Length: 598
Image 1: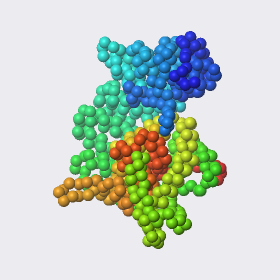
Image 2: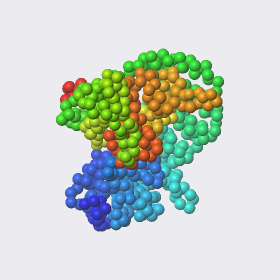
Image 3: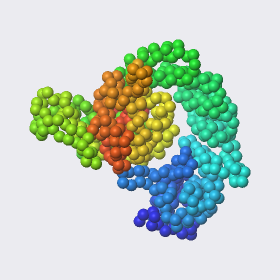
Image 4: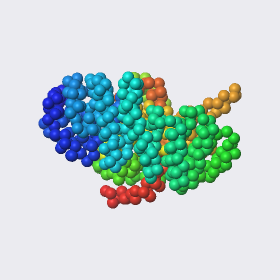
């Protein structure tokens, strides 16, 4: 029976023992409530409430705060509008009888966003979210859950700030947030205070001067303690306030502070790409400040020294060949880790690997030696029957080992290799990770903050793209990540001292395109032939992937973004950004050998 067919009355909902349900939860959050309600058999009321708790909370979206639990090629999880009008009506009536703050906030919010309830349900949701956040702050291990509830309550209360509505709700939240920031800003891990501070800036809680001074205080303390990455987050928060007040002097002062943090961060690295990337970010920060040319030139020389150490950094990890019959089982074992970062690193680095381009070429030549079909050439058509590539006939294999016929055979084989990786390794491991962890954009932000592959100011594109992929929405992931890959390759070339632009005779400049970048010796040297070869196959090859062209011009139907090539591309991006974190992972997680794990 689908959830649309479930019929529930107010009396059935009231008959549930809420006290027992609350006591059965390890922590009173919607994911726990979903599980507890779902464990009650033969009860439509509990089934309906479990379904309402299955949706993910997206507090940053005021008008659509609920997203499906998963998105697959042909189906997805529930959203608020999937419930029948009868069920929504019963839930809206039940709200005032709910004693669990988390559940009350969820049901009242659903009633509000679906327009089944009244404005009173919005008010009820605001107060319940705040009550739930306060409770979670006393018992939860993570600050993320209460912060999400506070954000949703605040964004909702912003809609009712007029004197004729409920300005008291906004004031109540503003006072609570201000108190929380002031009491938590000097904690050992001030991420919670910083998130609330950024939220305060967005929603006009407190004055710009207060936000600026608080952010500067956090930044300076974290910098002195050597926590440069948190200091950078705090300085960026301060910069937002300085930009709002158009205080040019303060903006330039903060950019210098950010540059100093990046330089100090580079000194704490072991050298290589991460250190070079930190220095490049420092140079970018100083470029916002006038009269800093000499400082930037000195930093550039330091960056070039660090780059010498980076040549082999992206080639640390390899995984042994595995029996096909055991590949899914081994992937699930390989991804098991201690926490979200551990499992994400294992998914990106240990579970699978980019296709070996030299092996692929050798395999193609061996196939061609045993067959003569390739001698007659061929053509390749896309999903609309349009010829997108032709392979000319050939007469001598010895002259064609690097020719189009060999490449065409390689592209057929790489599709098989990617399909095996996606179905046998990446998807099973991804499912294991998502069963055990809720994806937090803030956790991803801390992981990706100083990636040598991601230019300053572009981190959020990768955070969103990787988040969408983790949640199974590869359509959105590809639309965000594919343009960013080209820009990151350009940034990578620049970080190695190359200028990825062309100067025309009329004085105008043009940025180098994706094909040029993927053939650039520096890019191949830094990323390695296998990563670059896989990117070429997926993004620009007409026979296999061509995703960049197909997506840019809108040729691909939506269902194709859940196929093998898009999923493998998403994983390949994760692979690239996680590789430089190998040393940190080894030092902090003491990984067991593959043999002992098996």
